[in-house]
Image 1 (cartoon, rainbow, N blue to C red):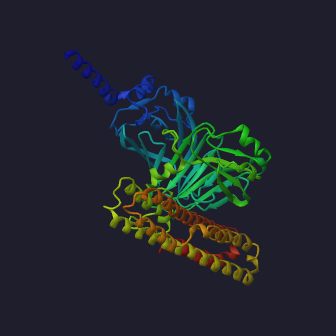
Image 2: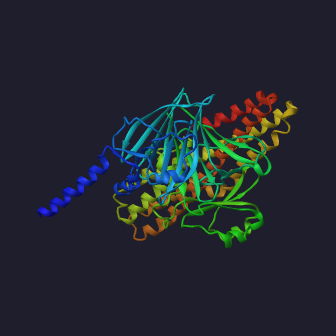
Image 3: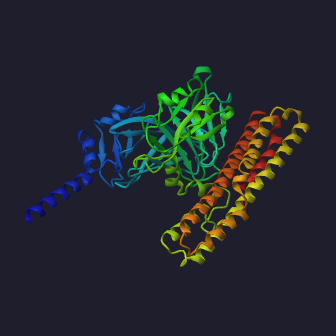
Length: 547
């Protein structure tokens, strides 16, 4: 027994010394990190100031670097600052006003993006502060001449949390990005490439997130932010074969966080042009892991038609270029793999359904969704507790059908907006001939809203029909075959909710795209800016108004 106690003492002493030794020298760093736990967070000093981005080989080896002890927040840096976990490394160089982000995979690194906190003039780094340094999280504050930016990384996470200071205008993200995707979790994505527009700046119809497909096909980056009032821009440069996506910019708001998350896997995303479809899909590429894969058939002007990739008919439907990526996990997705909806939940704390309803001012605990209610009711039937909870079941169904009613009213409001904006655009074109060329693209966007509303009308049924289905489920309480019938009726209710979510999401996306196009017309054609401001105000009133 004494020997066992001695072994325990030596083991825990060893772990203590690893975590609390004042400074770990370079040749031991990778070994110490592996022994202590690679998913934990660490801060390092490179001990030399680099004028260029640190190479992946240098980051992998860490020769000559110093590993700071836990809770050391007063370290005087001789070189550049590096902090990392087992998935991401972040480097703040003293001779750069950018923050470099690297992916870490099996001990190897790849530089994925550079962040710039921007104001009206370039900023240079003036000082660094360590706000937190422990195995659970590292937080660094980079202070520039006028602005500052907080950077926080937690144990095992693939996302970097960013908190810009109040003086920061925007966060610029530079990467080797081939496509920027504005995902619609219920309807069609929008997909932007460098050659989609001839302008050097495009306002994106984002609400709180976008995806970047990084060159090489093995990485996607997701940007997420807290406020739907934070606009984003796509910055393009070059011409012909040299045309490229130079950066994506996110507008900053006081006290609002931004997250950048990296998804890494071999063949994570795939693009095939129309000359290689369907052969390239069927023969040269297949999904590298089980998930809900989305296929976007690319159209002009950022538009796309989105389908589940698993549908066998897609190869016949795809007559244009397409982009394929994993939108969400399924039951067989590896636990270590993350998808965009995982990132959305981890950062914003909600899933797609709750998100779109909250964006429209409809989601709350008092207004549960069809999915939430039907799954809860089915569990009561499974456990033979439906009789005990009959009153609560009725209350839940009442709240659910109230939400369906309010959602349908919101969809009808989009229909009214479309009609009003179509008339307004046409009237302005008649009154101002210089508007004539700008109006047809705007009307085409509004037509997409109309089509979204009409195409799902039958699937949405009516709130009254949902009430009838709910009443049928209540009538099953206490019956022997109640569960199986309840599940079938629940499927119908979930289908109604899904059709509403899809319609509402598409309407909101197209309304934002309409609004961004109006802004771009006003910026590009100053002589019609006053006219466009009237249309913009009208559109903004709907997007900002809540029931």
